[in-house]
Image (cartoon, rainbow, N blue to C red; front, side):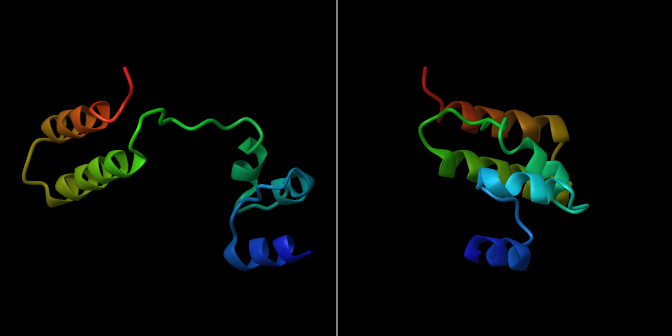
Length: 86
């Protein structure tokens, strides 16, 4: 019951299997709730914080519009790649 209250207040998808079907009918988060049981993380490296920082920086640089998008993406990809196991 507490989980349901929290989810309704935050409008986030559940981590509880028992609530997935209930949230699947929600127009705002239904698409996310339906994917919870099969979703996988894109990141399999050693330092998610550095990878997220690289992506945040990429977004900021793209918004600034000073550099070419291709250069910004390559720089971010290189930074993320450095955090991944080999």
